[in-house]
Length: 182
Image (cartoon, rainbow, N blue to C red; front, side, top):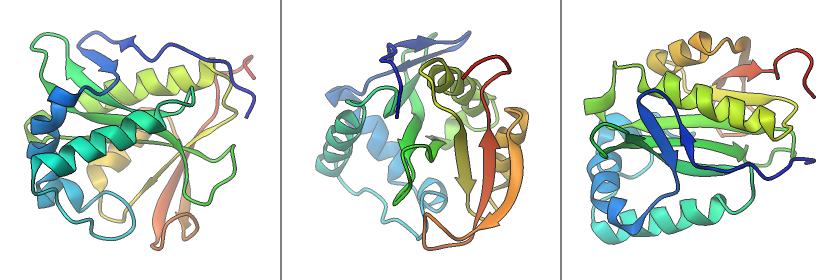
């Protein structure tokens, strides 16, 4: 992947996209300890988090993923309140090539329906394309209409159902850099 390092501290009108901190663990547990969030993450039902140690381990794992710019998994924070609303990520898909980079997100249900996922994802798409990514993909589980709507609002093209990176049928979306950019 021929990408330059780009700062991870991203700001939008309402959000700060930043590295995880250890003190985010309680909010991570409050979010990923919920079936209504976890049911949409990955190719099979993930076990919900049950304690702060699991949340801290998740934060450590995400911090390690963020050590290879422009890839990473970052906290999405309300600039107004400082509360962590969820996460946004840019990672190589499982068993994918270096050009098969996925954008994804998850939010606490209190943050659903406010446009935060679209706002955060738009900033991370720009981050990835500024760094030189040739495309950015999103894959969603069947029935995850809220995430499908986010992909469409981002202008991602719907490419159909695939059974490639995860052990499940997934709806594939693709974004290309703005014209005139690599």
